[in-house]
Amino acid sequence: MTSKYKGWKEIAPAGVCSKSSRTFLTGDWKTYTPILDLEKCIRCLICVMFCPDGAIIWVPDKKDIEFDMSFCKGCGICANECPTKAIEMKLE
Amino acid sequence: MTAKEWKFTSKDIANKPDLFLSGHRACAGCAPATVLKLVMKATRGPTIVTEATGCMEVVSSIYPYTSWATPWLHTAFETAAANASGIEAALKIMKKKGRISKEHVDVIAIAGDGGTFDIGLQALSGAVERGHDFLFLLYDNEAYMNTGIQRSGGTPHGAATTTSPAGRAVPGKLEYKKPLADIMIAHDMEYVATASPYYWRDLITKVRKGLEVEGPAFLHVFAPCPRGWRSNPAKSIEYSKLAVETCVFPVWEAVNGEYKLSIPSKVLSLAPQRKKPVSDYLKGQGRFRHMFKPENKALLEEVQRITDKRWQKLLKKCNLP
Image 1 (tube, helix red, strand yellow):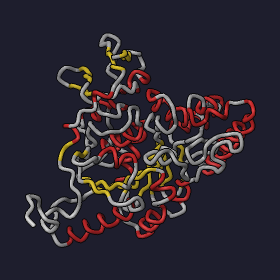
Image 2 (tube, helix red, strand yellow; image 1 turned 90 degrees about the horizontal axis):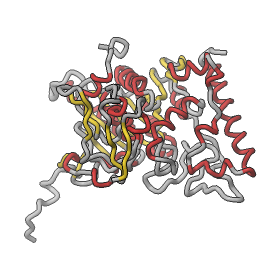
Image 3 (cartoon, rainbow over the protein chains, first blue to last red; image 1 turned 60 degrees about the vertical axis):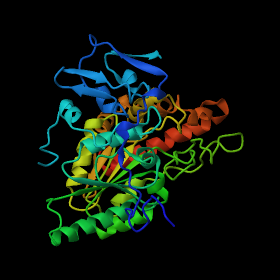
Image 4 (cartoon, rainbow over the protein chains, first blue to last red; image 1 turned 45 degrees about the horizontal axis):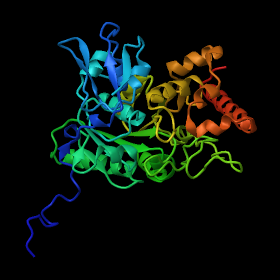
């Protein structure tokens, strides 16, 4: 039998996930989009800690937080936990 | 640098590269994903992670994608602790033979409540008895969420799941939550702790302490699941705060069997008037919706009673009034 795939003796002994999940964009799941009001934001970084998707990034050069909309699933944890209510969830 | 000397600011943590990457396929508002992200921020060097089957294993390793930026291994449901002992033993012998140059490699075993309370308990007990050097992290979302919200040993009393549905005859789960952290202390472990993601500094410090222990360490982390608890995804982290404030899930640590309350719970022990009634935590969760019906008033009182009883028991263990 000829096959272009490797036989069981050649492949790695376990299933190997080779691609980083950062290439799989989950941002299109969301119904609500977070809108950040930078004037209210006190840079406490609580949202960065609690975001389950790592979609909020602290940018040290700009001294601001940034949303990575390609991963945000729109759960609203950031808006709920923000102490100054600087984040608002809007219907997309 | 030990955990006591390790001073960190939120900026230090935010600047540290993620080891649990974005793009995993957890539900929106998944608190276990937050927990894993924070836990991986607390690592101190080369780390190998092994994970039992469960939500976080499934969402982070859908072929051919992986969300782990560290070496990561998955086998069966019951083997998180057995895997960790194998990895640790292999590292030891490879170091002896000079085949790895790293000075020390940390091993973290992660399992959900099904993989710890029920299925993985014997493997965990065995690995702890053999004294392997690893940290066992339990993220407790209080049911088998991955397979469709079946009850587990970690499901609290009265919660409705698909195998303990609330109806006219049976008001949710009849049994009580297994006190697993106390079972682990009975193994004479050096470090056992409970943590909640809302108190993230506390969580990160506890993970670091657990990694520094020479020998097994156990960390029980509370992790609300909006899908299985039928709650608002935005409130996942809020529930992890309310669980501590109502004493449903007190946070404490036990070094060499000596219980010590952590600050969020210690505040409540010193100022009991700040303790909230359990109904604050239960309302808003769909799995406890039936408890607020007039005919189930006794059930609500029973949950309050058992919570107070366990809290008093814990205070006694901590030598507090």
